[in-house]
Structure formats: C-alpha cells, structure tokens
Amino acid sequence: MNWLFVGLTAIAGAVLSIQAGVNGALGRKVGTIEGALISFIVGTLVLFLVTIFFGKGNILSVVSVPKWQLLGGVLGAGYLFVMVLVVPKIGVGSSLIAVIAGQILMSTLIDHFNFFGGKQILIDWKRIVAILLMGFALYLYNKR
Image (cartoon, rainbow, N blue to C red; front, side, top):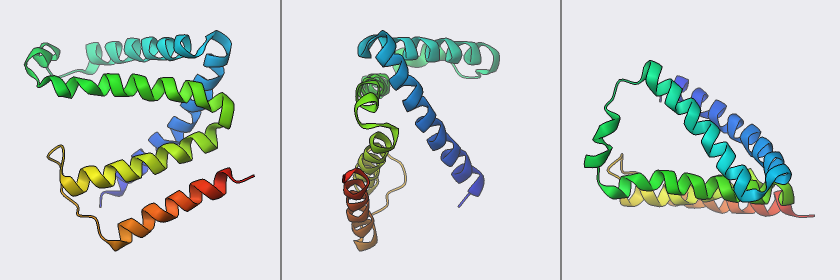
C-alpha cells in the first residue's frame, strides 16, 4: 500500500469536513440551491485556472468519451446540494459519517462487481462486518 496516497486521501477527507461546514454556512446565508451553485462556480473557476497553468490533457476530447462518464458532474452537484441542505440541520459530523457509510457500502459493491473496470475486490465476511459496524457507528453517533 502506498502510504503517501493514504495520507493524501485522509487530508482530502479532512478538507471535506471543512467544505461541508463552509457550504452549510453559505447555504444558510444565500439559500440551499444558490449556495450549491456558488460553490460549484468558485470550484469551476479554480479548476479552470489550474487547467490553464498545469493541464496536460486534451479537454476537447470530452466529445468522444462515453456519455455516462459525464455523470460525475451531475453526481457531484447532487452531493453538494444535499450537503448544503443537511449540514445546517444535523451538523457536519452526522452528515459526514452518513456520507462515509454510504461511500463504504457503495464502493464495496462497485469493487465486488467491478462496475468501472478498476481492481475487483470481492465481498468477504470482514467487509460485511465492517459495513455493519459502520452502520452501528452511524446509529451511535446520532443517538441522543
């Protein structure tokens, strides 16, 4: 396992917590849909500048990719909208533990069935126990 990538991913997870709080506050101030839009516009501008200065690919090849591969933007917008909506109501911690539980469950299915051509990792009893424990953690975290 490449621990550098694991560390970078952990940092990305920490950044998601900050992003959820920032976007939740933005949504309270300007509106849920408006907050999601503003966040996407700012992110798009940043990526545009990064692409101009550091991009090495061919952005015009977007016309030749399978159309289902463009769903990432739609899914990202949906995720962002949900986070802007729920964070002010249930908090960053509860929102993100639910996100992580959903990510682990779906990623386990994606890996098991090899949906996108990555490395196939079959579901075993350890993964099932981990998913059940994550569900229990979600319950405990939100129990009042």
